[in-house]
Image (cartoon, rainbow, N blue to C red):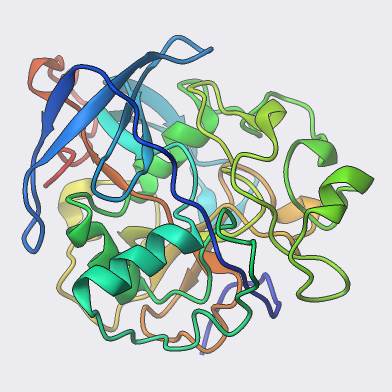
Length: 314
């Protein structure tokens, strides 16, 4: 059984953001969910539009249409580096929290494949990322929220920007910009849910200096994140079957590393994989949501010869 390389025990409970007022935009529904009227929040510090999903409280960042550099020639599983075109899409600004996931369970009665998601739940940890989540449970949550999991390409573009930065914040590694084993901030360590070796998750959004070029947070460290994609060799092509959701045994992509990760595995291009149902070791695996951008229908067509990513929301 192959599984992610970020070992650990752990867990927590988490917080739901307050809904803001503002103009609304229509997001398409997925089977199992209904249409969601997104609340427009305006532009973030990086200049990109943000929204809130009132169904689950997720903050969303709109990633514009266009090409980006995906992969890394120096990493065997991530080579070759290549250009990929994606239509505009939305991605969660933070990982889904314990409080959000608890609300999903209460409203749906969903029977978890990974029933131990709250083994390490601690009072006051509602705003930590939910962990111990199988790929199927993450998919079910996304359907309820009227969203979906991000594709591997969408996750990487949101983390690295159009030019493929090694780390969301730039070209130089800084262990204090994300939750990882080398991070030494006493203030951040004091906020951790103690799960293993005195370390664990921190509340989502705890490292604003680690924001990606689009203003997306926690793309590295904290919790490993599921993507929708099968673990298939590059170059990335959305139409080659890797985005087939109907294969229950295929290895699925995990991204971003966790609080227990070492620096060498904490890059925007590093890929991990696991079978979707193998939840026993998922005490460090969570996810974030994604979906169609309100402006997706107005996105320009990909230039000739560039691989087009999946239409967000498909």
